[in-house]
Length: 302
Image 1: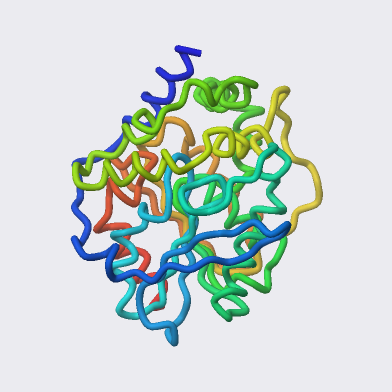
Image 2 (image 1 turned 90 degrees about the horizontal axis):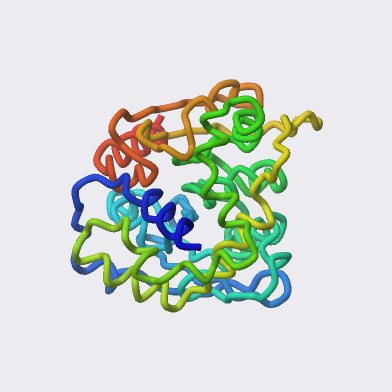
């Protein structure tokens, strides 16, 4: 399992110079909880005027709501920005069993937050596993999604295709196969999970959040939902996303290669905008904060 820990540190090393968040953000946000399927409580933090258009943000691995701090600040003048903790993380519930992290239940969690906010739909933003959940919400519950914004997570059909046909992508996904091993969680520590965070003020917050999180729950996303060998191209009928889509992808991401972006337009029924950022890594919302914020604002204001 030592090799797993080394791979994790490598995965989290593609980070740009630290960006400081507004010191008072945590005092400004309003916290709340939604109740999802099976009584699972999902925590969220909200910023801005609740009468304005809703932007709902979903984090990935290993992360929590605070990953969106720069985007929340940048958007909150014009939008009601809500960032949720996914199940297994930080202040949300941590149900036991990999089946409790099935994609259908993760979609239900997003729907529960919308209900708790009194909204029928919203602009949904996701990064990494949050991106996978956001894609799934748009396909499984299309009425909930007004617009869709995805950061560094190709459509799963694209990822499956690359895993099956691109040897480099298959090699670079070794970390995911390791995460699917039964005892993988034993190699994870809060400090190790936070090693990608270069913002000195933010890192203790991440360590604290990961101490509250459940490592088994984090890895259940991979065990329940990530493709397994032998990898195969998805040949099932296509359910096209019926919302405008913005994709932002840091080209320095060594684990989700940009080849998986090809043909995304075949799986989207509305307009699709793809912005690639050279030099930015997997955590593009931190590596290229100003460009990500500017791109999102411009795209939403069209």
